[in-house]
Image (cartoon, rainbow, N blue to C red):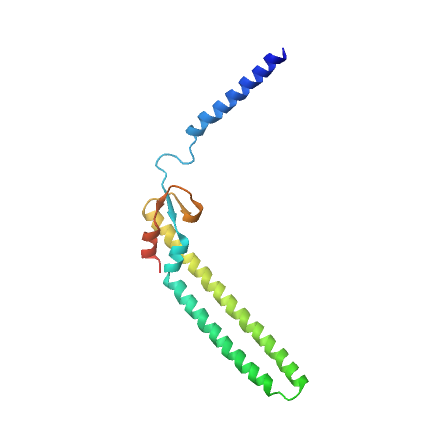
Length: 156
């Protein structure tokens, strides 16, 4: 009796797995004709003139900030008393924090605008070429049409 129960359970489990396997082919991840593209986003970003300009602008702002800090150091060094130096340092630390925050905020806003622009370019190119889905190339192990070069030509 125990042997027939075990055999029955084994048969039921096998039927379940066979049913799952049969359904796997019938419910493929995408319907027939579904087009998938991949884009190497870091390559597109590296090619972007907007990104290059932002990096250049950021470097210029860092040089300006460094020049300001050099002036601050000289000004603090001119102070005769310890209290005068501490008061001036406190003032300049507050100014530095404001300048640094403004630079970070400006950079983040511009970076977000560039990201939106690149995303819109990818979406427009994908729609123009009738793709249903676009994935980042770094997340795809196999498959999809690589449209990176087409995007690099269009991105600003």
